[in-house]
Structure formats: C-alpha cells, structure tokens
Image 1 (cartoon, rainbow, N blue to C red):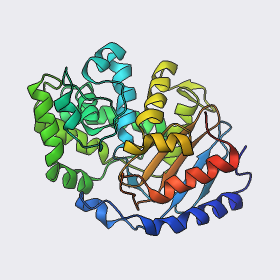
Image 2 (cartoon, one colour):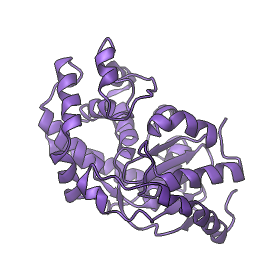
Image 3 (cartoon, helix red, strand yellow):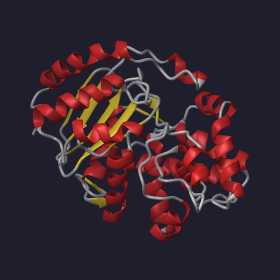
Image 4 (cartoon, rainbow, N blue to C red):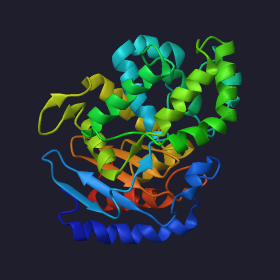
Length: 309
C-alpha cells in the first residue's frame, strides 16, 4: 500500500508543486481563467475506506472533460454497447481534443472515440430524458451516486461561460448533425453538455469515483454495484488509450494507470483493484493536462510501481 502516512504524500505533493510554474490556467473559457495556477491537491482512497490527502482537497473544480467518461458509463448502461458504438468509435487520435479533422476524413463520419469533444457530444446526445433539465438531472444524479455526495451541483457561471464561447463545439455538432450522428437541436445539446462539464467536485469526490472504477463498478464498504463490470472495464480502457488527450501514449508509458483529465486541472485516476485518485492542479500544459498533476502521478507511479503494464 503506497503512502502509509499523510506526511509521505505531502512530501511528494511539494516535489510536484514546483512544476505548476511551467503551466498556465485555461483562458479560452473565461470563467476558468480565475483559477489559482499555484494550487495542487490530491486525495487517494483505498477499498477499506482509508483516505490520504494533501493540499486544499475540498476546493471545488468543474469536471470538464472528466465528465466524458462518466456520461459514457451512463450511456452504456442506458442504451448498451451496440447503440453507443454505432455513433462513436474506439480508436485513439493524435489530434487535439477539439479537432474537426478526423470527422472530415472518416467514412462513416463519426467521432473516433468518446474522449474527444465530438465523441463526447455524440455520447451526451444519447442520455435519456424528455428535456435538457431532465437529462442533466439524470447525469447529475449519477455523478452524486458515484461520488457518494448528494451535495454536488454545478457552476452556472462556468456553464454559461462555456456555452457562450462554444463555437468549435457548435461546428462539431452541426457537422455531426449533417451526417446523422446526432439528431437533436444543437443549442439544446450544447446547453446540456456545458452544464455537464460545469458539475463541481473536489479531490475527494474524484477519488471516490476513481475507486468505483478501480473496483469494477462496486462501491467499497457497501458492496453496492453502481455500474456493471463490463461498463467499468470499457471506461477504464478508454481512460488508458484516450484519457489524457493527445498525450495519452506518453502517459501510458510514464504512469500506466487508467486516468481522465479535464481543462479545469482535474485528474481522475483508477488503479485497478487498489485505489482511486483525485487530483486538482489548474496550471495546464500545452495538451490541456494539469502539468503538476501529471508529475505527481508520475512520481507516485515510479515510487510505488503503479503501472498496470
């Protein structure tokens, strides 16, 4: 078991924290530009409920792209693999997460995987409900269940900021609607998607979600099954192959655990059968990943042999 004391984790955090100066906060979404680039925090939760943490772990961040893996799980549970993968593919991409290039080059014109923006929008379009509000409530309840936290909500400011600046995502949606990948009103889908991305969590919430994926969908302590094992397996596979944007290959070599990042600086980690990890570090590298968060995971992986490879 790594990190036998909180002090041990704090030492590792301080080592990684020096890397925050190498990144910068996301500014293409105006509301995210307010984050403190010097922040870095981590929580690690084990199957027996033990939790070690360091930094300002209760400081809230928005899920952003971490939500992609959660809505994928929900869509798979609601609609099944065949339906989901008719609309989105399985393959990694070397392009930026918001690129339209592969959509234009692919035939049929469907997103390569659910972790890029086009794929995530296609997945979100499958979430069940009779209205945007009902569908968002569906997603939010699922996140609350995963995190074991009924107080989770979303940031209206961040959602509005994203919605008003989602020009690239609008382009992706219109392209996919033209080719029959999505079939709903583009503005309603963007309203839902930006609210999904703006759900607020802290490191403890992320770690609790991570342990459920790590334990193949079962909530430790209660033994409640939150998702089928095959859904957790599919999600973890995408986290390994596509979870860190177009730095996923390097991350697999250097760290080698299922993980998903977001441009708020969050990272969700799931070390299979061992523990869940939640990280917050708003300073990003040029790929959109938390620069100090990546270093923190790399140090942990080397020190405690966490890689699954």
